Image (cartoon, rainbow, N blue to C red; front, top):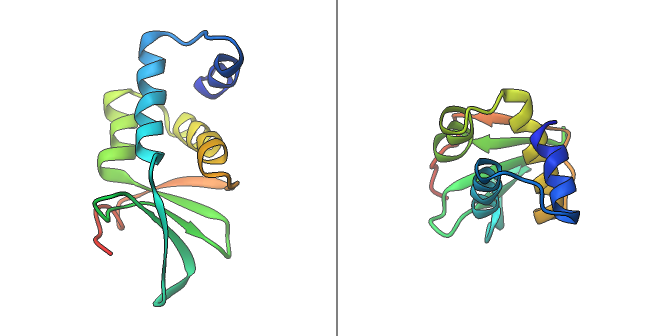
Length: 118
């Protein structure tokens, strides 16, 4: 059973193991407290930044794609928690819907905007 499906079930009745809870907590902490910033020079994007003004998410308004900061976020899910690319996309897509209240078609890793100051 994939992590997203287990997380949905867990919200109704706790069923995640310790590692899965750690992964979910990590993602929730990354999404918590993000603020939406629009840049005049990039009107086709919405930037979600943390309290350190680091871009964590970048959403394309025209294509509905969501770019995820690689260093410190996607990289951790991939290397520390050993999640597959498709599993990372799936869980982030669902958690963005739950926590930030918007749908996205395809979360992608993006190494170009990582740790970019606004």
